[in-house]
Image 1 (cartoon, one colour):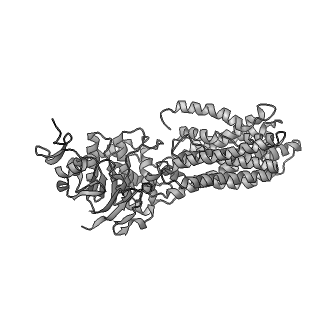
Image 2 (cartoon, rainbow over the protein chains, first blue to last red):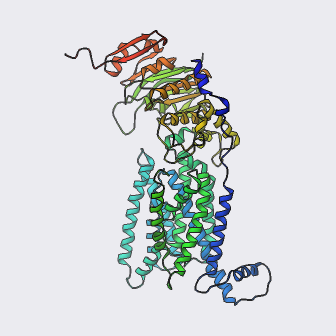
Length: 355
Length: 269
């Protein structure tokens, strides 16, 4: 028995673990922030009219200080009314979807989950299609889209609560059930829509685009995105705990039901808002968390902020391609899938050993 | 000694099955610094009982008192400050670092929007040294052996700074070297004053590390008390349905061991 004690405390010099808290990767954050900044400036420069970088900066400065205007005033409008709102929307939607995806992959303990897993895209898509069918007014479309997105997730959540065991699995199954139902309703709306103008409008909307985002949308959407993202960022360490499984997290003293509900709520308002201003943009919420884990590992304290930066850069870049690659704009949902699927395949191949 | 945990007339059944309860009318106490070893055949409800004691499952009848406080009246975070639960080993989906897994034991001591600070890491490091896994503290937790993972889970429970430690089959799937290492850690912790309740498949483990043992079978304790009295031929035969011999090994061992024999002596041939 007395050698039990010595075995528990072997040579103290060897046993002394190096003391530290997890170092925060400021360097990496700095780099990612610079990347996002560069992509943003480039995205403001390029488009149907190219604007040199110096001009872009001067147009910005002119807002806040009086300098001589050396550029045609249409350029001011191109920057302020067209490209900047689109850039901001790209940053918000990209970071929001990536953060929601990381949080969902954590709480569902499954790296193959995307923020759409609970059916929010089907619901919001149906809402938008219904709005297009009934009125075509952008406000109606966006409101219905948001409302139905939220309703879908509430239905999914309520349905899952009727079963007692293995909550997360049942939640995913409920998401498939409710999502499938709303997909059917969406098909129904497409089927009865006027094929000359309403149906193409629905289809284009569903393919996703940052083209229709106005400054007015952003005034409403920004605080919603911000509150959802901040909610998840504040709970980021608790996501680690939930990722260990429900019983373990509860035995560690975590109120798992409440925390999970808050995270689902935050992710849902982010995703529903994203769908309602930009249509259905897939793959970001699935692929970006994987990229993040390769950079900083699975700890959500680091993964959530890094996902936000990566997601924003990724979507702004893809949007830049979507509007510059061809003469007509390519719907962004198509491009994120075209780019995301091969990236995901590559990551799977590279990361065979684990997440 | 006053009991640290008192179980009185405990009864539990799963809501989905309207059949018999898993166990009923269980009563026992465990005092500070004691190791209570829960034995019994597979599927007899050992894990269910441990989960009731950790507050994960709510018994339909009976009371569990922790230092006189009714468990059902405590919040999860209050329970977690008193009771550390080491689940049956299940590897983590994500490869968190060992130290980051151990520091999760601080959850009950931190509010929902806080992350662990240096002080919490210090407590985690102390637990890491106590169970002797300092050399793997920086490794991803799915890149270690089963025995090491079990020690990580024990260290995480110690980081909760509990008075009671519940272990659900801490030695299952481990080779005999690792089994002994885990039992040594458990004995050390009980000497340091921790009250320990563990489920086990090995009656030998009760001889090795426990002050009390109980055998759960058919919803009841077949026996409860001192391991020397509880673990005898008749009780083990009744519990496991095979013939068993209890031998005392004197030479350099000085303790009893269990030897399971083939089925029943009545078999022809």
